[in-house]
Image (tube, rainbow, N blue to C red; front, side, top):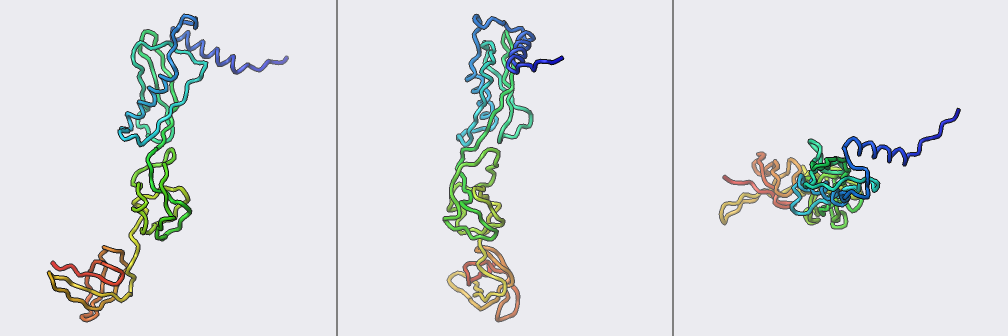
Length: 243
């Protein structure tokens, strides 16, 4: 004995019919006013925008369209859209859209969230300890599911900084990935200066650690042999801060 394979479209229609019967919906499409799919999509998208507190338009929310064969009664009340508890507002999630009118219904609609905020990204593959030049970075929009936390919006914020780890092309450049470049190296001869009003005292010294601009490092005083802490002011000068 052979069995005919079920027609999937027929199965779907039967499922919709069964749901309509359970919900008490009328089956005569000719006399029904249907809820617009555009309204359902907008309700879902607006719920996500509200949850994200998107006051500056920094994200783009796109809700999928319901199946075109789906027919739901027009809701007399405003549609209600609810996000799942503890939803991560990035990438894709599913929003529950429902009607609480005389003929209630509910459905679940996938929604895609993309950031439209311009951020600084790597213009090419970059290795650790690269001192970033203008051609190393560019401005782009974040892809879906990528966090914008700590990212930069102006390439000037990254140029001249040192990368703490390697980056692939298109990867966001964040504050946590950058260090000021090292300008003084351990063992380097430097000028150790102390400033007091209009007076300055300068002696030769030797750096005992690497240092970036503005960083506090240890320096050996060439005259006394004592080690003091000084702020890196340039590639050759460090300053002892007098209290």
